[in-house]
Amino acid sequence: MRPGRVVALVVGIVMVLPSFALLLGGVALGASYQLWRDDSGFFDIGEVRLATDTAAIVAGDADFDAAPGAPDWFWSMLDTDLRVRATGAAPDQRVFVGLADSNDVTRYLDGVAHDELVEVVGVRSAVYRSVEGARPAPPPTAQPFWIVSASGAGDQEFRWDVEGGTWSAVLMNPDGSPGVIADVDVGVRSGVVVPIAIFMAAIGGVMVAGAVTLIVYGAAGARRSSSEAVAAAPVGQAPVEPIPGSG
Image 1 (tube, rainbow, N blue to C red):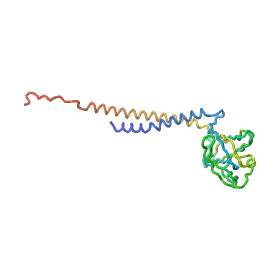
Image 2 (cartoon, helix red, strand yellow; image 1 turned 135 degrees about the vertical axis):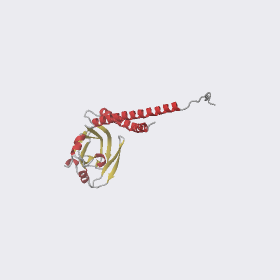
Image 3 (tube, helix red, strand yellow; image 1 turned 120 degrees about the vertical axis):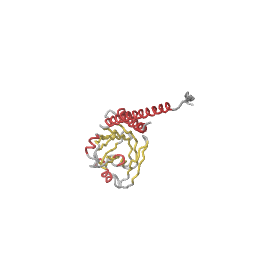
């Protein structure tokens, strides 16, 4: 078997699994985004019940970090919108939900007991990190630094065109009193998801075709070498007859 065919066979085998993964990943991404979007085009990450005995729940840098330092054109290209919806646990319960620069949120809640959201576990449980404090929280509705916010009874929702910076989302009672409980739903909408899915599927398809071609080419060489080896192998030898007059 020629070395070139050996290399082709090995490269094809190595390529085939990541190629299929890329192809299937693109198909799955596109299908999921199309199937699970709501009427407004948002893909729901899921609703979770958040509750605390303190004055606020903060989803900080780890959850709402928009990669500071990225140029404005990068976020315009991504064309991504974030939707946060909060509903009080009781029908007449009023809630406040807002988004602001993380530094402003840190200064606002300095000395105020609150919880930082660490991880969401299922739909009814979350892991928090407690921050101690004794100062009462000023009403969030009176603060000027919120980029977007919503407050009131029933479903409260804000939408935000994602931009560069480090942001924190905050859930509170409108008057800043302790004891917050609400169902929170987060949705994301992006104009680049479908193009990315198509690109992944297309590149994956080309790579799969290339990998299969290399495998077929290398395997054909292996079969040819095997056939030639069988044809060259001695099956048996007839007795050698002496040539007359040679003795």
